[in-house]
Length: 362
Image 1 (tube, rainbow, N blue to C red):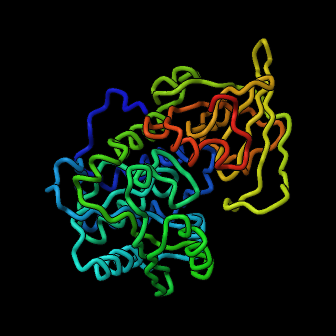
Image 2 (cartoon, helix red, strand yellow):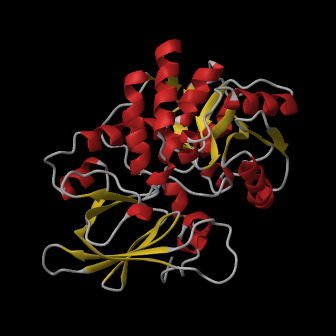
């Protein structure tokens, strides 16, 4: 996963929040529905009132510092309908601390896709804690247990969740049961809940996390904000990725597969005809996020690589669930973190995890 030439950030202030959210949308892999105007406004107001949140590397912390991964479970879009009280992350972290009988010294993002790129900043501001420049995925993924933290041997539990209505629950269960247990609670809370999970000392976090995630996400947001006049290939290079296709959407199809899956969204297929010769046909397959791209029937890219979907001609970030026939779009592919390149990593975040057949050799 490219970190380009930008240096690490030392703090996040109110002027950084919007760019951080744009960067989170870049790493939402076509799942832009995970962004929320309320999250931006709330976090900006917190930082304007309380000051910047310090950002540190895990290696800068004392090795025994307890770190907890924070974010939300559910849909951040519902923030705009079911507003936070401002105490949810504090409630979740304090409940986790009570169970562990110790105090948290730093927070780290669960992931940096969509609004989860910004919400850990709000959590750190609420709690007066530093935020580690790292994360557990490097993009969005829909399952709480699908992280490099777990790949590195860290259990997602014990974990604590808190809703905006004062609800709070502690979950201590095997990793394979996390989704089944937490999803009903999140739904009962109105569709989202703050979560504090993957408790671990800083020494282990330094070993297992994807480093530089906040720096990379903030940089991506600034690149996209300043993208006017760039062609797709130049924009892809600035983001450390590659240009897959620019073309017109020919068809959008939603499928209703038989059987049950852990992922909540229906599969979506988007067919794009390339603008320029040889006018290739590219099909995107998505379920929550874009997971697979086929060019003239051959595999062109797969998750865990991240797909960035932009409208033409202005490079506005798009959500695959809002794509319509006739739209002109560009698709970029951004490389996944190295931790996902293993057989175990591909099993968690590759095409099979989304219910799509795995390409040969994957």
